[in-house]
Image (tube, rainbow, N blue to C red):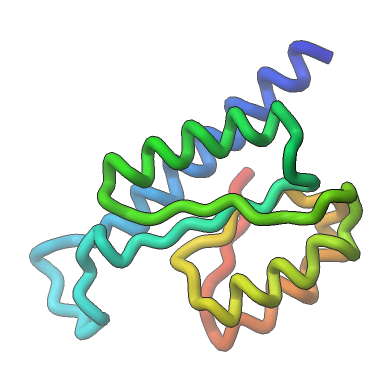
Length: 127
């Protein structure tokens, strides 16, 4: 069990770092997007359930990384661990146009429809 938790924490950390690095942008590109500065970085973490020490530890590391990049970070999620409980949070975060939604999916197949209608946005899968 300890090995599984360590592996999951490592995978989540790597996914967060990759997403944060991808949001950094390039200063030499004139893509016409809105600014491209790190200040617009807005990461949301949606664990299976909030108030879980494992996910709280991961969120603390992600919050620190976002702060170092002068971005924003928030952890939101249901109190019960179910895909149905995660969907309203995905919908709200999509409406808020956050830069990235990091999801610890309870059931990836059940969450896929909520993640896919992003208006042409790319919701990549890490791992």
